[in-house]
Image (cartoon, rainbow, N blue to C red; front, side, top):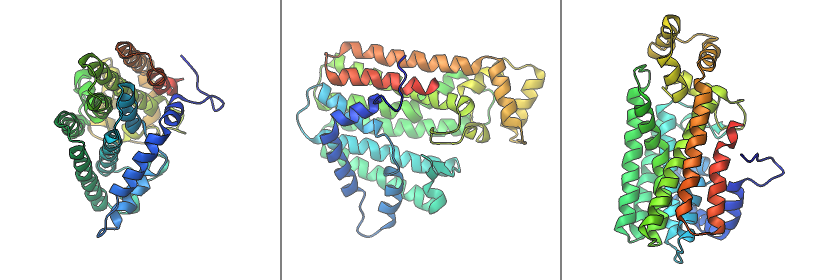
Length: 334
């Protein structure tokens, strides 16, 4: 496992540099399409989140997949902007649902404006995303991205229904994270390959890469919520606990719980009667049962799956960068 320090350029930075001309076009397209002649709040809210310093991983996945498969046109810029708009829309909606106050180290849009603004601007971005999908002129690409949008929404609703439910299974958890996170990663890489009219084996490989990368990415986030240091991860540790989400570290700890521990989980998760010191108690239980370390290993395994999927693709500097990106996603575990 590579360790990425401030002195060594991280893979997402190398990828951004390699794709710099394309990313400049994507950013210009994003700024143009988030404008609104009649509703100035739309660009205000959108800019607050889009310009908050995100790594643009999802748009870069579209661009890298298209270029890796030999695409020479310009509609990959539209697809990259589409993916970023879908992602931003889901973040706006998520922060309302989760009643979040912080995103990427800044106050959330729903806190600075209001819930209504966040929801409606999110809806606007979804509509803009579909406009750009259509402009690409590919029914296959439209099918991939529209299915991803539906899957994301389904995953969010499923997470809502599993929250505070101690009977949530690992299968349900995986379905949630495949929906809310991995679906857009997978759609980004698959759509880029389809746009380039790549062979079916390459399309499948990039789809599988995106799926595994997204699962690993979310598992790392879930690990960080109980094992992170609280800085540099874009959120406060313990957010999932306070929101009573059933993530993998908790699911496995609940399965192994004795009577006292189960009563604790019923109080803090099912009933929501959380008291000072409960988060630290939850961390101790999770660590005692080894479920935090197991979550870490699961994330590493999914990262390895992502890297293995790339073996179907031709030798190319961008393939090496995508390989490094899968490594980088799990570097937060160290």
